[in-house]
Amino acid sequence: MNNSDICKKLQTLFDKMDESSSMASTYSTLDEIEKFIESHADSLEPADKINAYIDIAYDGYYPLGHYLNMIRNYEKAFAVLDGGAVNIADIATNEESKDLWGNLEYHLGMLLKIYKKTGKEKEAADLLIVIQKVMPDSFDKIKKKAENDRGLKRDPVEYTEKYMAILPELETKIEKRTKDIRRTLGSCFIYWDIKKEILKKDYGIEWKSPATLNPGVKFD
Image (cartoon, rainbow, N blue to C red; front, side):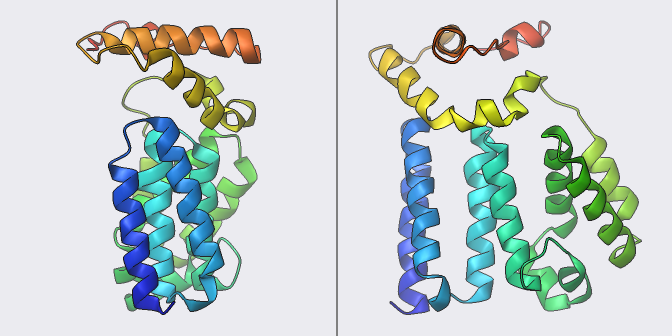
């Protein structure tokens, strides 16, 4: 397959991901996309490869809450540019790379935030050093974004490797339990109750739902 054919196939797979009717099927499609990219890595243009990894990280795994897989794909995007290390020097100093990456400050702030949330303090510190060196004018903005923790509170267990390792399997189990339940106002509470039960019973994980952690927020 040439680069054009690979990109067309990738677009088809991303469309399939967007149309997924469940988290379990989304995980399956994301796994399919990652394997497809790896099997055609030598034939895919760097720009298209970077964009694909960013889409997997931000549009795919981030909404699912699988932050380790998100980090992995962000790092792969960086690696395409600098030959294997998570280093933003090439991106920050090359105008073509900046355009290619899109909102550089946003994605760097996101990666830095997830590093910290998942306990990867060394990786976060190393990334800050590089940002300060090659993007001094953006350093404070990126650092501030990483420290901004506005939004819904989430159970810290969701940022652990133990939790993320079982996420695809967990969503499959939840899907089986909820497949005959009509999606209506308040159905999210049924989903959370089932999720809490399975996490405790099957994995020994204590988990608090968004409703429990955000008592002043109305969910539907």
